[in-house]
Length: 172
Image (cartoon, rainbow, N blue to C red; front, side, top):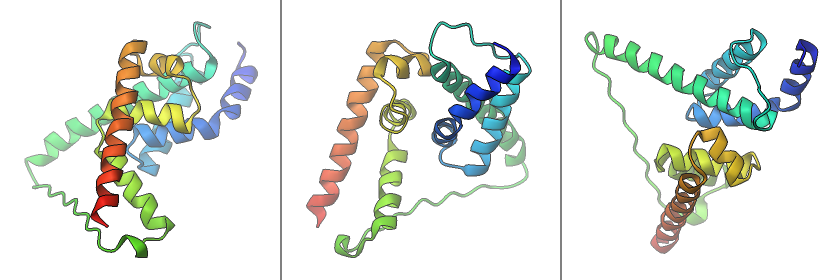
């Protein structure tokens, strides 16, 4: 595949790739843009090569996923070094009062909050299937797991989301 053809393929799947990068980067826009840029560079510089064993989109999503994992490792090592000098405190408090007063933005925040509580693999497979319209087979290839593992993560993720939402509905 020549460079122009490669660029055309990347442009064609840019929006979906950005959505996948957002998912891989815990919805952090700046980090997602950096990861996507790095993935594009890997492809255009020939450090990641599509060999035709899967669709271009599936292959590129794998490149994005592995690039995001590399970035997480780098950030983790940086934080370890910085931890000697500063104490990090994270406060994740979520209070829910009256469901009838929730608007769409609050519902969206609540959804993303519950989605973020899922284990990483469950988040990945649900994002790939629901937001990127990949089959479970394609999602398993992107994630680098067997189809059986992908099915298990998919079913458990749906079950956990149902459980979370049914408990919130019962509270009201």
